[in-house]
Image 1 (cartoon, rainbow, N blue to C red):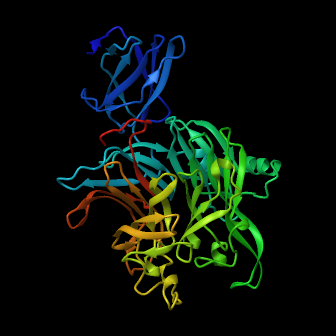
Image 2 (spheres, rainbow, N blue to C red; image 1 turned 90 degrees about the vertical axis):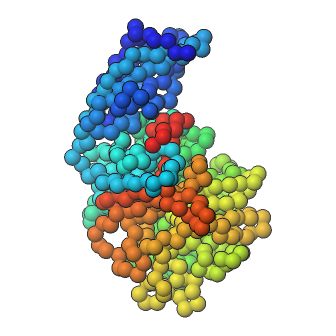
Image 3 (tube, rainbow, N blue to C red; image 1 turned 45 degrees about the horizontal axis):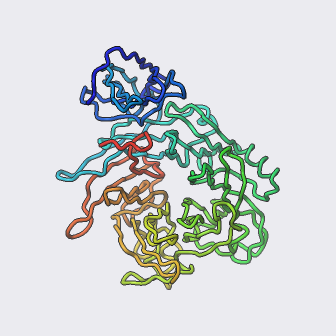
Length: 510
């Protein structure tokens, strides 16, 4: 049992982040400390355990996950080398007010009688200012990331993800916010919970390193996703421009088009492997969005995942495909092993096997289950922009199908050997989300769907921001049941998904 230790001396001090405190204490050799905190002496949340340094000595770490303008109670629990526990005295810490910056307004509700999956919500905002946040399940902001230096060149995190070491990784770009005449810029940055930079890689430095290694990839900007790997490497999506000869409209002729590349960065953010869509895909296949005003955006890759066999699965929105790439943990030649989607390598089987039952203009492939090293199911947010491409009549001049496009969360069963896919689950939304979004299967079996700035089906897309929608669904006797939902305004939410807490290996009740 715990025994009191009133002689323990610890300090709690503010940081430059109003919702983050710094905790400092001296520990004996072999001890480790966990800090509990909450608005009452019931506490309710805890940090991850922090070990003493070799030989013992001072320990300093961050406490994060608190709401603004609130006095928090804090206590230490210390495990000694002999296994005994000491509990420190209760201390208090007042958080600061939220700053006057472009933070989103969140509104969250839980359906009576339902229990959401534990954790907190990471909301990746890219517009208008691009300040991403973490909230509790009541919609209270408990963490945010804002960097004024990035705002000066219109940079925003696209996306931001938690790392196994407790820091965050952000691929920051000005891809879609760039004013006329402003150069593209990007930085890959690891930050601590205060927002301090731990390490970073700017666009110019990446391109210099790519040139030095002899790669023909030169990045125009970072784009849409970054994937931390188990071995400390990082897969980064970048966009590049090349002049190509096009046979199909708008050709024939030479055109400069946008394509995508992948960069494998080692643990020091140095490039060691590259892949380019220009080496593997047909530049004359462009079923969607291939117009001058969009820069002839040919592939628009927006998500990358590691497959269980060590290869990569890449989502190309403008090709309506998920593609498996020969990566083999960095030793592969980059060949496309298969293409999943309409006009790809898989046959759609089961009751839902019409061409329009495929996903179109999709976001965020998420690999769910595997048998051995073979993928057996995956989820995807099916935006549906280009679904009319699969109808016999094609897309009418309006660019819309008839009936109008709709969006859905979808889960597909996959047989990589037989090259078959089957729609296993879907949740057709009553609106159309023309960009962004994701689908996640949660630990308790629920499914969470984020829809970016949706509009009612059949209505025109407004020029102003509309709220983004996030919903958690459980299985019910007659279909999915809404457990929890949240709206985000202003609505520029690229992704939103549940994480256990702000600490690796720690799950908060929400």
